[in-house]
Amino acid sequence: MRPAKHRLRSPNDRKDGGCGTTADGSHSSPQCPSSPTIPALAVSSGLFLDSESVDDQDSDAPPKTHDRFSGYLNLFSTFLYMTNYYIVAPTSGKYAAALGGDPALAGLLIGATPAATLLSTVLYSWWANRSYKSAILFASGCSLAGNVLYSLALPYDSLNMAMAGRLLNGFGGARAINRRYIADATPREERTAASAEFVTAGALGMSLGPALAAGFGWGIRPGTSKIWTEETAPGWVMGLVWVAYIVAAYFYFEEPHRADIVTKQVDSNGEVS
Image 1 (cartoon, rainbow, N blue to C red):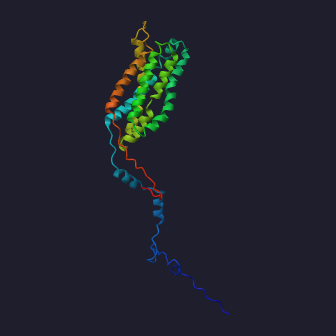
Image 2: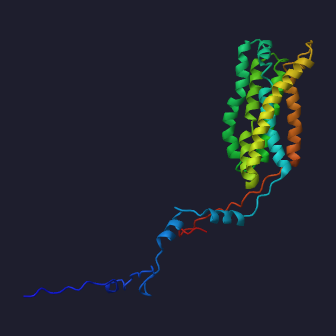
Image 3: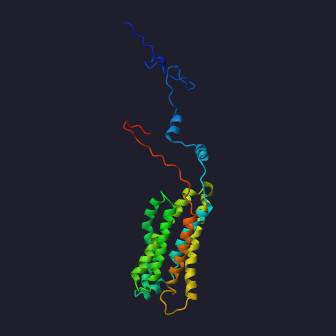
């Protein structure tokens, strides 16, 4: 008995209507639904991104508005903070001794500022999501109050007051806000230059602070007054500068352009509107 011959089934014999493909990758049957190709799947899934398409999307977006004077105020904030940080370094040992403490406490007076800044960074990072101006004004107010407390510590003979003043100075450190402002408000083509200016402003403050303290030591002679001395002068001078900065920021600092936040609501059917 001869075995039965079995004919090989072609792709057109399948139950799905013969959805085969030809050599050029097209479907052999017009009834076949179109399926995405491998490159299309890769692009749609985000595995491969075309840099030109990303640039096109960025070019279609509205340009960022950047107020020059607000940018300078933002840089001046970090400049003042770094000046305020280092201005007490040359006289902090003498100040601690005048307040009845050990000169070794100078390290605590200096180190209290960056320690408080570390804590305030969390608050200002959250605050910057909503407003830059109010956050900068609040931080500047903390720095102003800290300098006043630091200078009044000698008339009140209170080392704790001086320490509290330095903590407030650190809590007024707005460098987290300043960096965020550069990232959000500066156009992409100017962002590198703005970051370099930020570093330069901080470096200038680091060098100017001790220089001012040396000038106070040279120009202020010991006297009977406890209000204006070599140790308290840095706090008074920086307090006046912070007052001028707060006034300028209040009137001239402008909030950068923020993209509209679209709030999605889900109805009872689970549809996003």
